[in-house]
Image 1 (cartoon, rainbow, N blue to C red):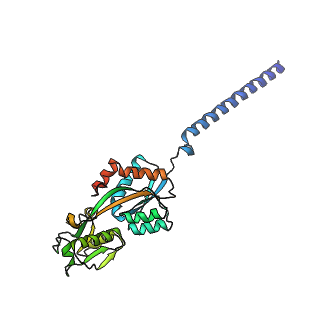
Image 2 (cartoon, rainbow, N blue to C red):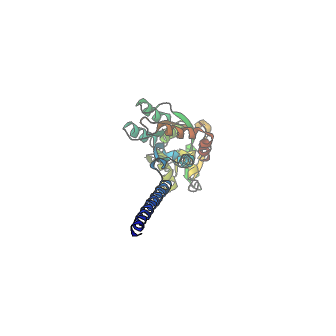
Image 3 (cartoon, helix red, strand yellow):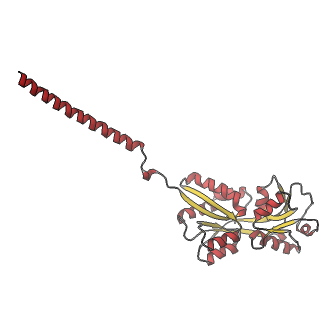
Length: 270
């Protein structure tokens, strides 16, 4: 009958509509599930933490390598290095510059930061010795500290307020030599650059500096009785963004792996 047929058609359409709705819901559910799987949640994105390290200029090459090695197993770290004379860096920190770690080329400048209450419990992680840097081939035939007093020698030193400059004066005093530098540079790398560019006949720097520029300068050894040993302390600075992470970098530097890297650049053990 016609009435019965109409009723049957309505039931079929209703059933079909319900099936279509279930299919749509199922498709939407699958789409949402796939989206959740493909789109990373915000919590899964590793947060990068900047660690700002203030370090003496003689540490430039070694710390760059150590930082790269440390981040291989600590991928959420990004190092920001500020290299310069330890005296300048200590002044910057005591004046409020944002640093997480301070590595000094001497104990006196670390003490300034300690006295200001901006660090505590420093650890000595390396030591260094002095050497006379001369241009490749040593054209002036400099053999030792006594030669630096010759009138034909253009000598450059780091300023007395800089650890390398202070150490150089101590070594000259031990040798009984009165030298007259033509300039006193802002840090030990500036001394090295003057010699490597041929603007000076000699400069007193660290063994590690001569090694870093072996293609451009040569080194003249200073005997033990005239030698001055530089010791490098390091500490976490008060107010560090992540003190634990900063401490882990210090732990790394004092570890066998870190000491191996430092030795590769000419540093000695503490």
